[in-house]
Image 1 (cartoon, rainbow, N blue to C red):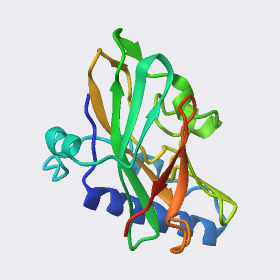
Image 2 (cartoon, rainbow, N blue to C red):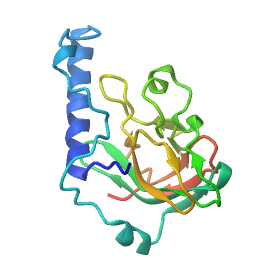
Image 3 (cartoon, rainbow, N blue to C red):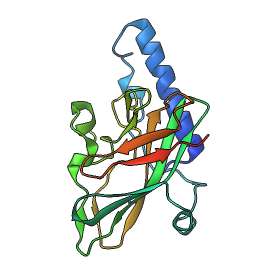
Image 4 (tube, one colour):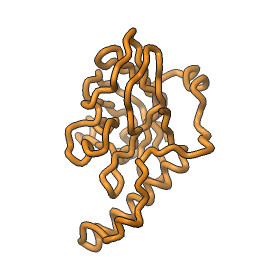
Amino acid sequence: MNIRFTTTARRGLVALTVAAGLVLGAAGCGGSGDDDKKPKESASAPRGGDSGPSAQEGQSEQPLAELRGQDGLLLRLTSAERDAGGFVTVNGDLKNDGSKRITVPAALRGDETEIIRHGRTLGGATLVDSKGKKRYYVLRDTDGRPLTTTDLGTLKPGESVPVFMQFPAPPSDANEVSFQLPTFSSATIEISG
């Protein structure tokens, strides 16, 4: 299942998440009691009218990095964009570059209890700013769902799925960061914007 948010939808979700988090933090409470009114969709539920690049367009551009994982998995990072809301969105494709059908490893979601509850995701991804000596984790919504592609299952040989991960933005002078994902090699990527 290919799941993707448009850039506008991601920014809207992040702005809503941050606003809700600030309200909850300022009020000093853990919840509003309105759980029944919250949508039950995953953070990366499909939306119509995706205006992102097609798979063919994405393949013609030069990747920021290609990271090798276990069993022939290949993560091709195509963009890392800083937006005005203080976030960085990393886009790419996760591909089965091997000759056998593989299940996306659960280890990619990391080991945090809050993220584990939301299935197979890329919630274990981090950005490391070695200059500022800080690590940035994938953002989460108010229900603890990671703001990344979710519901990753199995991939046939040669199959790829578009993926995204959203992080808090490092300071504006930190344009080069190390991208890390469990079971994959790490790579230095450049943030644009």
